[in-house]
Length: 299
Image 1 (cartoon, rainbow, N blue to C red):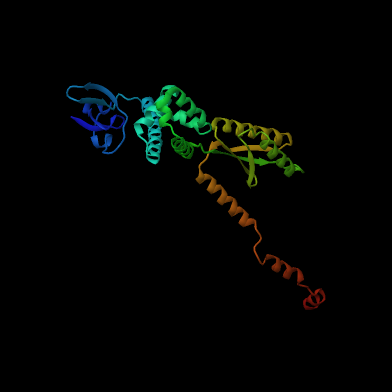
Image 2 (image 1 turned 120 degrees about the horizontal axis):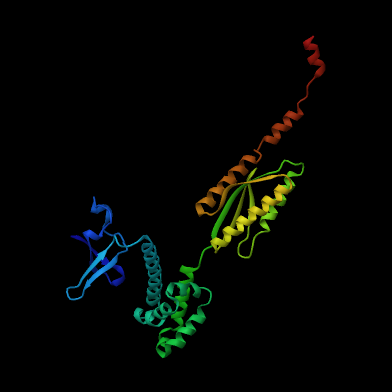
């Protein structure tokens, strides 16, 4: 007939996805559509309050609804984790904290998660507003330990981490002062940095250079790196050089940064003089050649 599921957002009450509501396509294997333990967004079709039946549908959920539902669920899970941890560490009643802190923030900001993100920088004003609107009950429940525990947990879990951006370019200039012109192009790119989006240009191995930046705003960072590349291109072309974009500005992971650092270390090690080279050169320079004796031997 279908699959029985637990509704996570409704205290794990039981519902059923009908077999006809599993997929829009022909069902060849139910095991591929549903697996025990998997979290799935579903739509409520019917509710029979007398018998306690809840009919659900998986096939009627659009991809847009899936993305929105998963985002809302993950946000709510984060808020609940923070609230529960605060209640446990301060020995407070969780439902009372929800009533005086989380639910008012849901009503005003649409979601408490968005309010918590703003509380990272200015938590005192939020608490003052909650106490003023909640009255004596809110003032009694939002104590100083609760404020400290909640603020500390929010800052620990929700402080945004800077996003790392990178672009790879090739710079060449074969004029007599080509090295100086390339350096000037690098400085022109770095000057395009803005507040909160500093641009750094590093040499990997001629003619490959990388532009890097760290920012909290991805769109702004990508725009600034694009403008930095344009500034470098204008500078180097003015000196009859050339710039070629090998990799457009993009967000990179820690693994990409680690690979770049390892590559730079390998190049540095390859260019580093090996111990003993100087002695070998000195020996070669110290050797003398007896021209007279060599001539006599040839005769």
